[in-house]
Amino acid sequence: MVLSASDKTNVKGIFAKIGGQVDDYGAETLQRMFVTYPQTKTYFPHFDVSPGSAQVKAHGKKVAGALVEAVNHIDDIAGALSKLSDLHAQKLRVDPVNFKLLGQCFLVVVAIHQAAALTPEVHASLDKFLCAVGNVLTAKYR
Amino acid sequence: RLLIVYPWTQRFFSSFGNLSSPTAIVGNPKVRAHGKKVLTSFGDAIKNLDNIKGTYSKLSELHCEKLHVDPENFRLLGDIFIIVLAAHFTQDFSPACQATWQKLVGVVAHALSYKYH
Image (cartoon, rainbow over all chains, first blue to last red; front, top):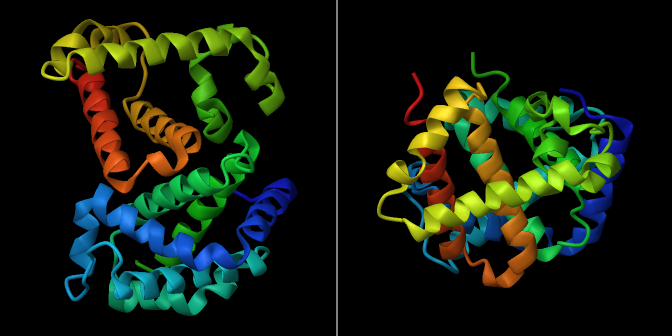
């Protein structure tokens, strides 16, 4: 799976629309993920995962930041997220299936807040991009 | 959206004519008609929430024996349906709502694959 030129344009475009709200999108993504896929909470036993949790907000900002970093280096996502990839492989070891769940929730959040901008084409590009990020983060698992 | 976001799902619809671009897919009357069929069927599940497996028993056999659809595709369709609901209902599509609907599409997918052999 390769990101085409139009995929990159679409992804950059939607993130430009999201702008500074991306941190809130990150928090809402995690909140929805914990509610929709409760098994994902097993990776955060040390967190208060209740709605409005400051920890979830802070972590959402982290996740959003990583996605923005990937967008800003969309020609070399592996390079941009190399340290995060190491972290996930050696320390966090989040099962790969969970990146799809996070991606699904991020798409839902974008659909809710940017319904008009999430055309079928942009949806496809964003889904591909999120898959690519997940692949990079699990690339060094074995 | 399923046919655009996951283009390999087009393999089941060679009789639908022009699926060569997102514009073609969106404007394709057979796609529209089939979407109506699928959503109507979803409605049947909602009318029979206590017996979804029974409701989809024959459809499950059909998807296995005649249509030869990998059940993974039901999962993909369910995920896309969630996104469409989110886009239409926006803020009303609360986290609790999303969680419930994600469960429902999972149950429907399971019911559709239940008779596979």
